[in-house]
Amino acid sequence: MKKLLVLALAVSVMFAVAGFAQDMSKDSGMAKAAPAPLKNIKGTVKADGDKLTFVSDKDKKSWDVVNPETLKGHEGHHVEVSAHVYADKGQIHVMSVKMLKAEKMDKMDNMSK
Image (tube, rainbow, N blue to C red; front, side, top):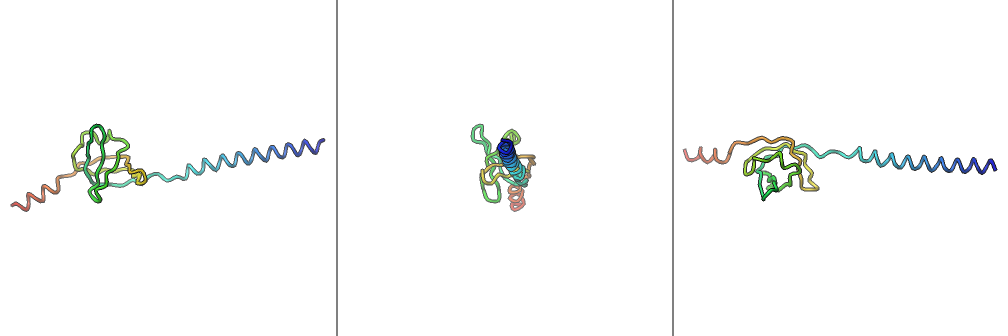
């Protein structure tokens, strides 16, 4: 009878430890996920109704903006953003915005002189 009780206790402890170890492995997997890289990108802010998108100069890729409130007031402007890029989702999370000079207009003015 004592052997059966000890065996039952040992099995229950074994299952409890296995369940705890499995739960810990899920948490550590989430902690290892790398954040999206922070990049500086030049481009233009486009407005389509209430939705704002960012179109990069380099490849003309259109990005959905996760936090569009950071770009309010910059619609149609040429800017440089510092943003976390989620390429797999086609989204950026803007951390800062910097207005850029109208480089193309400056070049055209210099050519006409």
